[in-house]
Length: 229
Picture: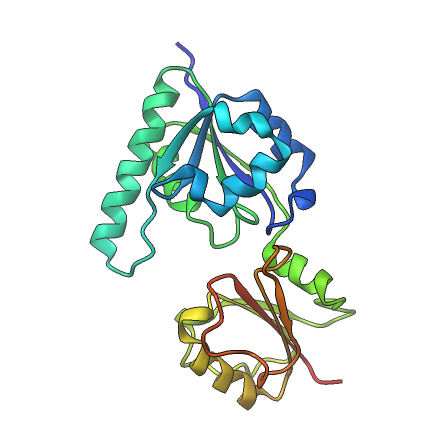
């Protein structure tokens, strides 16, 4: 029997109108939809996708728990479990569409599953979606990079000891849990700072300076720090 294909499908940053036609088609054409989290219908990715594909509610929804912790042993154990869940469907010749926020190539939990699935001999295909930082920049009418400017994309929570000293513009992701420290880095950088919280969602908020940004900003907070003109 021919094995199924695992698709990592980006559903964009939040606004259902920012989902790609390809993502919508793949969700429509396949019956097994894997969703990060313990409750598929509570997932933000599901809530975005179901607005474009109402029949998603009646498909076989497969929860894949992806813990947001730093304990490597626990993370690896849960990732292995998630891969095994998906592999059980692939062995039956059924495709699995794993839906994820933004784009599956940018700090995406599906990457961990992809490595396991490929090592186990399964075919994986990634379907690009609009990234959170591109959507956030567009929301603020900000070009991310012009002419010869360099652009750095940084997981801020892992880089708190390093100053933003490079010439060019920065996108800071994964900032919310250490926002006080991130704000101090931004102040020291002298760069022009903007932030979008919950970009393109109903709860979206936009900030245009370090001092405007709350210390308790939510998980979906993305910062753009540009060279001061």
